[in-house]
Amino acid sequence: MDLHAPAHAPPRRSLESLHRPRRMRPVHDARRPSRPAAELLFDPELARRVVRVLRPILRSYFRGEVRGLENVPPGQTILVGNHDGGMLPIDALLLGCEWHHRFDFQRRLHFLVHDMVLALFGPWKDRVRSLGCVLADRVNLDAALDSGHSVFIYPGGSRETFRSWFDRKTLTLGHRTGFIKHALRRRVAITPVVSAGAHETFVVLWRGAWLAEKLGLPRRFRADVFPIVAGLPFGVWMGAGLPHIPLPAKLTMQVMPPIDLHGEVTGLLGRELRDSDLDDPILLRQCFERVRTAMQQELDRLYAERRFPILG
Figure 1: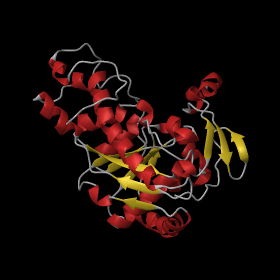
Figure 2: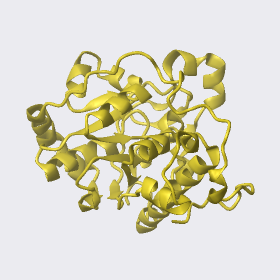
Figure 3: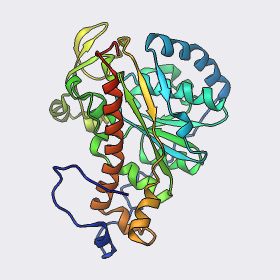
Figure 4: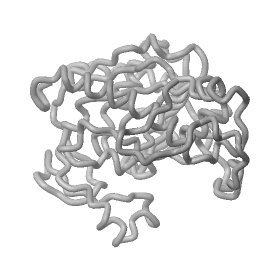
């Protein structure tokens, strides 16, 4: 495996030097929230009814297609997606519909979602949770993985889903490495899911990270953006909380072959991973770039297929 970093990254030590002891806090420390995890729900009959309604809409209005579901491994996996489309993750809806259609509602997939997304559904949020959705945080991710089911996460969060229209062809995954830790510690493969088109269902003019910080939104609402957005039905508006009517952009998703980071890294090190390895920023960054670079290359390929924005 080539655990490579971008060309602009500063020089660093090789992975072999990770044999040296490091003064790092252990993975299992007080940073983890102490509250209990949310109950994991899934109602296959409710999911069947929802898919029956949503799938034809997604496949016609958005001309949605999900390629490569045969790449999903038979065992548990962490599906990692680039986050597009603001507060209305059309691509996640499409993936959920195609996942359950392929696996006949017999294989759970838990989606980790922001609390603001759950809040949008108001009195129906329990129904949303019954479709496999759960609040995105470390406690619930651990609980979902402990259950033995696969999970779908957006590491990029609000910063990625409200990136500028002009940056829509570049994915960052929020530069977060928490999912890398989980995959390595649990020896669970990462299955990248790359989406093109959802960020053309509206237009982000400005992310507003600076303003969000000034307003204290990260502390109050776990939201680190306060964007200026253009789309339907409001024209141009400010803020992340207003749902929009998505433009009928062509939506294409590619499920890539799984990446066994644990196997690749232990093969290079010639030994099992230690807790100190999982807190090593160099190892985590190299593994992160391994995943992000593969996903960016696939995103470039998907956008190369598109002749025009929105039309596809």
